[in-house]
Length: 267
Image 1 (cartoon, rainbow, N blue to C red):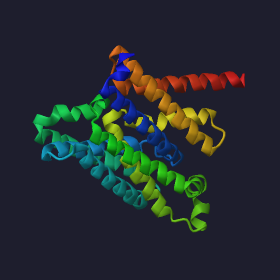
Image 2: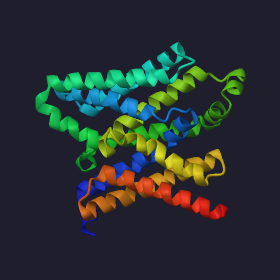
Image 3: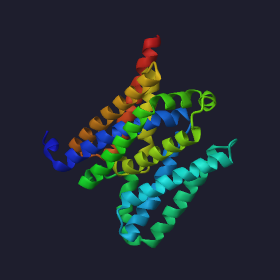
Image 4: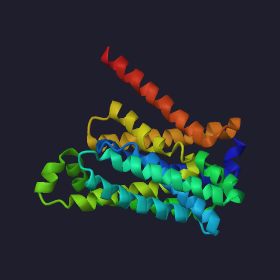
């Protein structure tokens, strides 16, 4: 197919494959922590940062990343303040992110069209700088998970035991939240803020249907994600569809197939 010879498609495919590796790896830990909705929260805060970047004429993804990291600190702080109602932290930060983004939209009417592209994704506009940022985040995420695999496994399956054993839970909780902020910020340009949480959660939902162990779930989550990225981008390129939406619909299709296959095996 001629689409594979186009540089914009090659960059899109490379960026999609990279985020398709990092996002589900983080998603496994978020699902286990019952924090699946944190993706939407940090995405809305990142949009506020991106809007400010356009307003100040500074690299938008960089400002969005800074906002997401600061929001991750705020979420952890609020989770401690409301231990019994930890989900309040997500609702509060999301509300603030939406309000700030709306305010910045009214201040910069001239860049609203550019910012709106981040709501729905613009993977075909990835440039070399964007790819380097995505690559750096992916390397950091994969490296941190591999180095701290045993500690993270213990913490997410028995946090009390991990605390008793001397594991610095505060540090690891903050680390996971910050890594999630990094992944979400760079993924926004690929699938958009409205769909970014799907890359974190749907591959994990698929993997939980077929995986038999924690390590196995990481493998299957990444595999489902990469299949959806490649399939979605190819379908979008051939039939001129929205790439971000096509990737997500591919993921939902894989989830439905996995559910039917598992049900069939039980019969």
